[in-house]
Image (cartoon, rainbow, N blue to C red):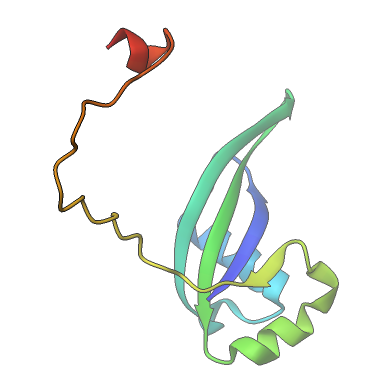
Length: 111
């Protein structure tokens, strides 16, 4: 998978606009993108009349190494990632001998 950061699109965009922008950044045709998954979506409203949505996406392409080598100048925006599925840690197998002690008056201490 290839992760692309900082894809800026106007508020009235479609998914195809995101695919076209990602393809332009990777220097491939939009048909060369097999899958596109949105990882993060945010709003950039720092310059008030110009408001943008900013996306971070994961893209699957046929020849990942070739595409990454053509994007050498965009090291901060384009990078290879391996997607790991999160696994919850296993619960303890032995009961506690004493009750846990919570010190402080934060949310846990008040509860």
